Image (cartoon, rainbow, N blue to C red):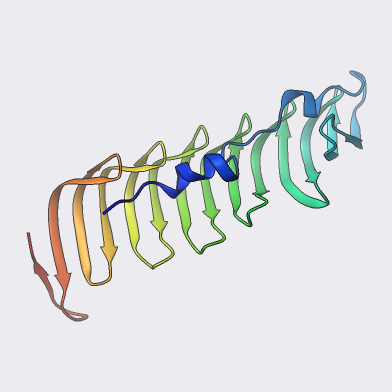
Length: 187
């Protein structure tokens, strides 16, 4: 099974690790507090709450005439709950910390794949569930976007349980589901 993580492929096309540059949320006026909007140096638009001239609280970033991010900011960075849309049609709904997915979230891919679970520093880390476009499903531990640790994968009528490292099955058992009531151990 070659499961070169689709998550890592995103680096080239969508930049999964969020990239709201510090100069994009530059200080307007250090004494400004309240709701306002401004155009960033990249031509994006920010609408939201400011504290001491820096985005803090609710807000949104619009890019190329579509919504890019809607959620919370802290000290000019994406922090708290929010939704992030990618130009590819993929989107993430969940928690952010310092411009990265961090905490619990759901990542939906335009091709039908989905990840739901824990994120750390922009990558699936901890417990989660990855559903592939073909319906295959992995539930278990992740590390840096890869299956890593204890988990199980369901692929059609085959169920594989055990230990995974860097997306590869290391040890455990494989079962075949014969019908709704019977499963048979293969290895």
